[in-house]
Every structure is written in C-alpha cells, then in structure tokens.
Image 1: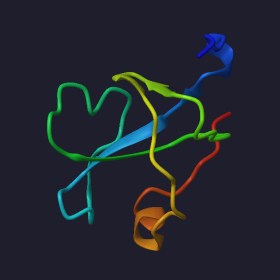
Image 2: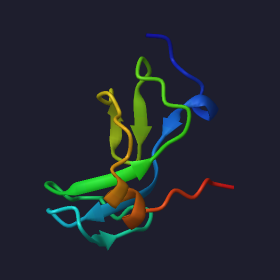
Image 3: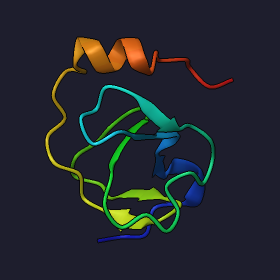
Image 4: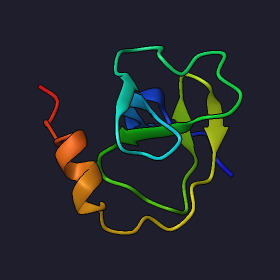
Length: 83
C-alpha cells in the first residue's frame, strides 16, 4: 500500500472512554484512552474510507464496517464538527 501524506490521514478525534455498559462517559479528553488495556472507547472521524488505514494516537488499524450511530450513544456523545 502506498504511503498517504499525513494531512490526508483518517484520524480519530473526540475520543471518550465509556463505562463497560456504555451508559456513561468516564473520560472525554485527548489521550484519555492511553494505557487502557480493556475498555469501551468511542470516537468520531470524517470522510471514512474502509480501504485505507485508520491512524490515531495509539497506532494504525483497518476498522470494521461502521454502522449508524446508536441513538443512546449519539445522545451521550453528541457530534460536534471540528473547527
């Protein structure tokens, strides 16, 4: 795979660590998931292309198919466009 220039990376933002049941936010700030080995983590990203890798603070991965956001999660972590 060819290297993608950094300005075009798909980058997660507005990460949040959720309770195991997903009903509350434990932390919601940059770096809040650092060092966590087991947790529910939610984040947003723009212009998703499943054929390209996702890069974020904790490394790179190919994400699975993305379903529509659960209404409860949308209420817990409302989408706020960056900028």
